Image (cartoon, rainbow, N blue to C red; front, side):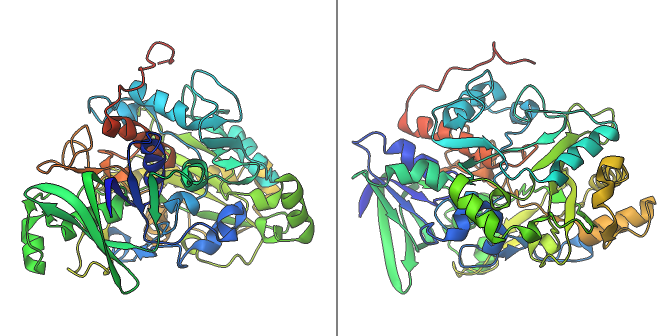
Amino acid sequence: MVYDYVIVGAGSAGCVLAARLTEDPDVTVCLIEAGPRDTADSIHVPVAFGTLFRTQLDWDYDTHEEPALGRRRVYLPRGRVLGGTSSINTMVYIRGARGDFDGWAQPGWDFDDLLPYFKRSEDNERGASTYHGVGGPMAVSEGRANNPMSSAFVEAAGEAGYGVNDDFNGAGQEGFGFFQLTQRDGRRESTATAFLHPALDRPNLTVETNVHVHRVLIENGRAVGVTGTRLDDTLTVTASREVILAAGAYNSPQLLMLSGVGPAGLLGALGVPVLLDQPQVGQNLQDHALIPLVYTHSQPISLLAANQPEHLQRFLAEGRGPMTANGPEAGGFVRTRDDLTAPDAEFLAAPVMFADSGLGTPTHHSISYGPSMVAPRSRGYVLLASADPTAKPKIVHNYFQDERDLDDAVAATRIGIRIAEQKALAPYTEGQFAPPASDSDEDLRHYVRQYAHSIFHPAGTCAMGAVVDEQLRVNGLEGLRVVDASVMPTLVRGNPNAAVIAIAEKAADLIAGVAPLPRQAEAVAR
């Protein structure tokens, strides 16, 4: 089992890499996924995404005790299936702000360098433009659920003094509106359906599912393959050119450490032979924390009613209606302080009771929304908890460890409360589920600490400039790259799936040794 390239992880990045690299018929690729194929119906019916949590399709991680959250543990779902987390996420298509990419300060990775790769991946329902592409593998579409509560939320934000934004991936992020989604004809468009499925018949692509990779095989400073298990059988796959880790912000650093690449003190204490002392592996962990506001009402229009027979019939016949709902249909970006140059909070509004990090069972018709804090200063880490490769890693996000993050979250929560007080939302805010005790600073700080949860956007643990270089090659080794959200030096403002796809698009060109797509600096408004 010898291939030119071995890719570990068939998620948002891995599927893109496998498809792009095998466009060259002389290149052989083995794509390895820990989970099964993406055949479960609930993957492809958008409204069912929450039913995938804590199933066999979910790594089902959580943090260890979070110091600034009263030592709560926070649920962290990650896709364990072809398509990875793009097969279980809310399908919101947000790239991030220009300054996010420019701020990485990595050659070839600023916004003007990446915009052509965003556009190459897109088949945007709005058509081709300065900011959007058509004809790419990934469908980017308007939402088809059109719940009245989503429109009311956008209207209420306007009544509260915030502007409208009809394209969060256009000239700027700020304002409120409706999200574009990674859907095609009302069904989920994961990187598996978009990139991998059309490539499955290629003779130079092998996809191995249900294989848990244990470590990268490194000989004389070079990665030469990987080894893992499928049930009780050991599987070893050799790479003649490169091993590429695309396992995500938790699993890629874990695999490096299991392979002897990481902080020497920790590895030695766990009995893992140290091949390369790299203390930055697993550090710099970032995430977006969301502060939920859940308002209950008596209008029978929430997603509690989505499974009615007429909605199923419409979904099957037209690909429209409540069963196409992705959760947060609408939202917006705001600055919590006037001195900020870019938004630091993203509001996400869903026409359903979204409680207990999405693990709670909805009991009332509700609208749930709140700010996702998209510019955190706090940093966490991923470490090995055991030398056993089947043990889950130790994850600590350190949410709100920096007190300024907590101050910003309180300010953003106040904005959310003000939006709820507007006339447009009055029919949908009759009551509130687990409200703050008051709008005082003290009570809102307590509320944030008690109820904030992950919105599932980890990044930064194998960052460019620290663990990998600007070519995404692991510093100090040959034949080993990392291509996923872990290479972001700082997390983008917004749902990171689109950015991970663009990173993988560019990485495919780097790996293949082809010239990068031309920058698009001249056409983009500053």
